[in-house]
Image 1 (cartoon, rainbow, N blue to C red):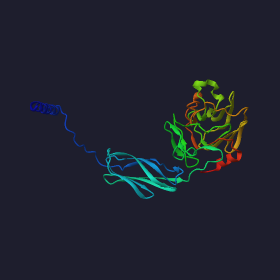
Image 2: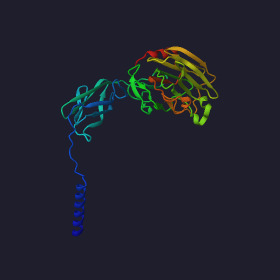
Image 3: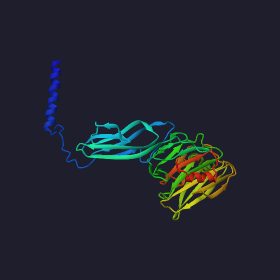
Image 4: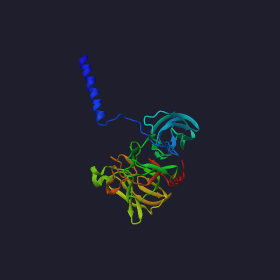
Length: 355
């Protein structure tokens, strides 16, 4: 055994000797150069203007951020309303730290979150966002879905997040923040308990005419299964170019037929928000633009929702993506869905109410 041991040790020594002869040197420190730049801090949640609405008086959030430096981070501090709630001074990657910190004492009211990063030479960068926790949402009469899109994807009636496909973002909205569409991006939500013989939707919309066509809203059957009879069920809204304008239109399935309203409105693309609302009873669909009736359409039967799943917002996909009604790069804000036909007064209230 001793002989074998000596043989192994001798072999390893020879390997190291050969390695050195071939120019493989031990790892040595490299001068990173002068520290010229201050740290960079990015906060991804909460973002500026985020509204948190939950039933609890006190709730928790996950603070998400990234701190980076050109040479080395020394410390990162989190402050809420001026008081430090957490600090970090040990980093696996000494130049970049991805933080995900849960904090469980968010009360109703306005809050300010600061992330402060310090590098080894003492340079400091502070990034601050303001957000609020507001009282629990009380649904309107007949309302089954409310998505404010104030920096997150939380639906306030069912109290759960919508499913997000792709990588959309947020921008300045009609009310606080708003959904900003992106290529191959949209939102979905299950239809369970949301649909009836009457149906209404209300939302703010800022039309982006690129691409030339886009899906706005759909509760439909898959075209790959039902072909053209797909549109005999459910509800669809989309937009298409018409010269220098964009036509916003809708299609309603009543079981054995489809009803077209094209256009609901013809819009010259501009950096302007418009309010759209649709109120559908068992016998009539009424389309509102900026609180005024734009079009009406008689129905021979109520909307037929058979096999219509899921709700899709910001694209025709997954079920109404044909005719190039793909992801809409437009902006959406304050989306309400009702299990009833809303009145003209209710439309005006939705248009004028800031929650």
